[in-house]
Image (cartoon, rainbow, N blue to C red; front, side, top):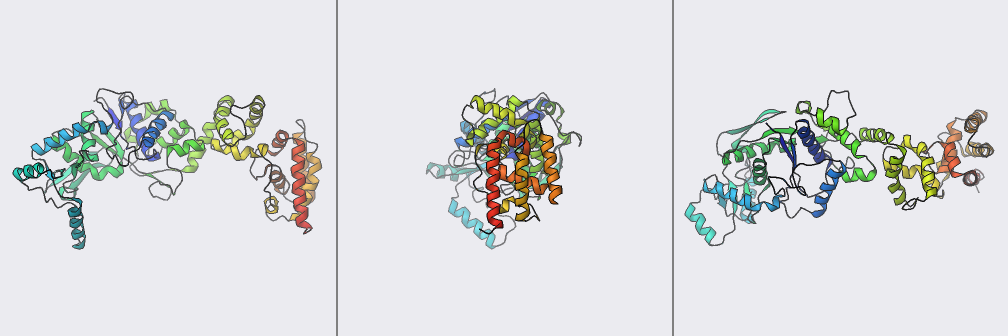
Length: 494
């Protein structure tokens, strides 16, 4: 069998990390089997579909370097690949089922449907939904109503007895009593647009899809789709329902856990290769030990048998770790090019950078490279070089369990030591500051932490003494003097 799989998102929002995980699993499965990866746009929900969401889809796949073999833009032998351009196909197939007695016109309006549902709830009926009111209409009655211009939808005749079973490659056989399947679901809406179920089944068949890899949330739709394949007399593809992507609290990944759209991760400074690597391991593992995979390796090693049946947990800290590791693999030129947009957005450097700014970035890079988890982290780390410290408070300068008096003395005694700093005596100055802590009988951090905050405005910064050299002794001493003055006012209660 020549493998043909598809990623078929609805362009109703930004690409969710869970959706992209589905795209990657399909993509790597196709590549590992010498198959075809198809992109299809399921935009039959015209009210919610947007051009922005469609652009985001293309941009996301291009950013991740995920190429589709058939689909929008590039075309293919089974197009069009945008469902809103295939409406005549769906209409013809829906009418085919009507002609064969496997579907029927329903003329019930929204008011009647709402009334039926309310009555069902009032009676506490087990099965809620359409009551099949129009299922028994004669062909003459249907023709008469249509001739009158009565609006209708087309519904599938779901069998009233028996059960429907399909095989899932991960979960095994899954059965559902037909009475529990959505009662006679709508296939074609009154506006001529298909519902998801009709369009999905028709397109998968006509595009030769061999394997359907989709989230486990679609398992309840499996029996209905199988019934549709049977109604058309088609062989259903193989199903593989993928484990859900969950937060660490066991709930479906959502905004309350953190960023969920690929655009957000991209804007924060995650690298595409890091995101691809990590997301591919959410619910899939090669051997439980190997953690780093290139796109080419995944395109060779990916097999469905390695997919977990259990939900995959999306760990933001783990993703940060992956990203940091990939950042440190970048050569200096590449990393500086990646960092520049963040520094330009913060108005730290010009667009394009001047020669002096680029020289500074190359000097700065060794100090921040090991500390970056995301590209955007560079902004707070280097802010002290481009902006003065204006919002310093006494509390910011005080280490835990250290008084203002002790901190003031520490800064006053450290100032002349700092004044001797140059490129050749970094170790000597550091040792002198450590010795100062011993002399004052305070912890080493009792000396270094106030210095760091006074000079950089943050308790987290690049290496302190290297930062001072980049800032310059004049600016450094001015900031230290400002902190000393602030502490003196506190100590003297001025």
